[in-house]
Image (cartoon, rainbow, N blue to C red; front, top):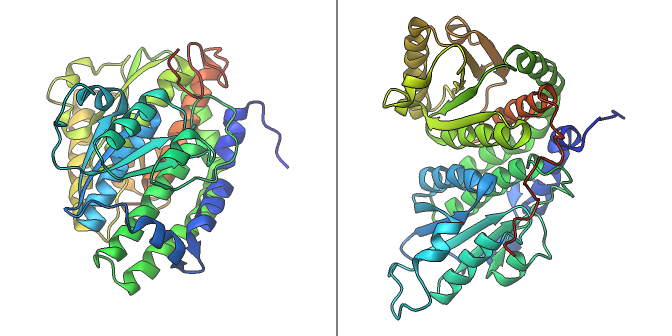
Length: 377
């Protein structure tokens, strides 16, 4: 049994088992549990509209969920900051502003985040169906929502979310499978294929953890003096860029921002210098044309940044020589499907934040001014 100096590192390493436990709640062999499908049957909006309300890391998993539900299920999804959504309707309005009545999905690690609870209550006031995804099945959010999809991440003691985040991504992927089957967007053969790849993921993560740990420790030492970082991703990977930047900020107090990769040249490029490195998500699913197009555009960006003299760390597929030749440092992630890649590729970013915190002398389990459940008083 390994010994870990901090809870955050322990919880990063617990992610394969946390994902396995979560899968067991929703899968029976190579199929979906019919009792879960029955619970979810009354939640969707008839017009196929979903609103996701969340804060912090949970909002980033919601951004990934938006693409999962749109691409795999054909749903129309909006993602709101919970703190903004709860203030938009106003109990003084006789007619809610949003007359579409989308189904509302709330995401929270603790299930007690006050802004997200307020969003849940606002949705209920409007008569909208609600679904809660939380890591605490006895939380207010899980109990009060019409439907609850709990995680099985286990207790997360470190304030920066790691295993609860990847378990949220896992449950959102499962939700997309349930909805895809209900809407006849995913046929039985496709479903089996999706589930097999999902079930294989924890073992694939386990085989990569030690390599990521060693490499990200070295990269944190190398880049410890950087003033700020820009994290870049396209499509579903934009959500992971946002999450990676947030982890770095909250764990190490080093400033970082997450952007869509295509937006770099629309302003943020002015920041790029020796003291502002880029962290670029450049993985690809060769079996999906849209992923290949995204990758090709990212490679072109990397080429442009090399000509500009930028310092670049890339997260790329194992064996990708094209990306490796264009960047200063390359972190390998084993190839996976486009919609599963966010789960393994976020883990090196979690480790980078952890080791950057150590470089800066931060108590990584208890960063200043932060709490596990964000509750207004």
